[in-house]
Amino acid sequence: MSSPEETAVQSLAARSPRVPPEQLVAELVPPPRFGDVRFATYVPAPDQPTQAGAVQAMDAFGSGVLAGGQEKGGGLAGLFKRRSATPAGPSGIYLDGGFGVGKTHLLSSLYHQVVTDGGRRAAYGTFVEYTNLVGALGFLPAVEALADNALVCIDEFELDDPGDTVLMSRLMRELVDRGVRLAATSNTLPGALGEGRFAAQDFQREIQALAGRFDVVRVDGEDYRHRGLPAAPEPLDDAAVERVAASREGATLDDFSAVLSHLADVHPSRYGAMVAGTSAVCLRGVSTVSDQMVGLRMVVLADRLYDRDVPVVASGVPFDEVFTTELVEGGYRKKYLRAVSRLSALARDGAALA
Image 1 (cartoon, rainbow, N blue to C red):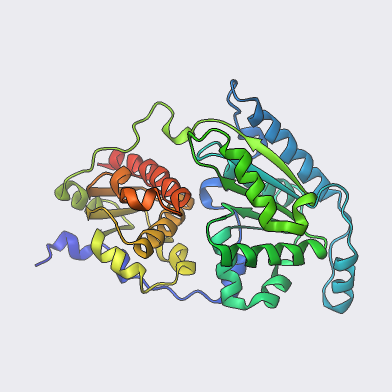
Image 2: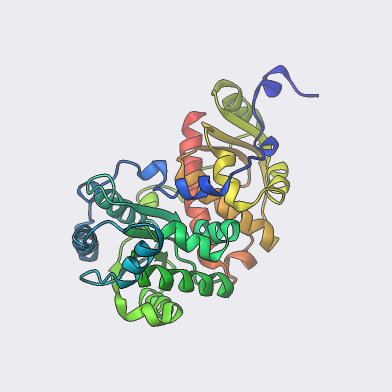
């Protein structure tokens, strides 16, 4: 039977938000964690010259976007105007680097340079958010919804799902044809010699006709989330997790297994709305995930929690053990390593609450 403290706490597994398509478009902005970043707030590591070079390259690209001419009009005339647009400089820029080197910080800074400081229109989302947008609106309506932007930013471009990659390549071609500039990032595996060069080649191959119109910028460095920090904190016990949930307004409290089951019933495009307004996610009994579909849903949830800087307070296994070796070493390795990195960072924040 639930204690009074438990019944007063919200449950993440009880949330099933409805998100209209127009809200999906309106929410294509940098996550709150990166709401105030600028190029000036990015601190390049002194021993990683590519980081300072990436700041300069992105800043110059943003200046080119702002110098790209008049705002695009609507209607049939606007359509022809967009198709005839020929912005100076490259049509796109691609940041290639490992986990935690600041690519999202740089991409968000580019958005703010163009929108917040420059007064132009732009969209910012992850690869998954754009594929979800196409799924919700349909392909051509999604193109129309994005085509009035001067810039479209795509974070975490994923190369491990052939169908979605082809879809995004087609979407990018349509937008470039209408004069929209593109900026994208993706991850390379840490500790793999030459991996960055190969990832860039994969990206250029997948976008095919657009490859020659993208500048590829390498960003080296170690994961800033783990500089001088342990990979993952020791889990708490159930009682400590429950105390944090009961004492923190806006926190949720669930068994880990209940959240995993609930994720199967909520479309990933709604995970962000599901965790919106949550001050902490408290989980009892975190266990190792072995099922691929369950694991991939957990990856999307980790991204949305990290975007919103929501601490995770947990008992059970540490987050560097949340996915089996078979999953981590399989075809979605990059996704799982990103999720472990992000969940570990959020768990450190959660441990501080206890």
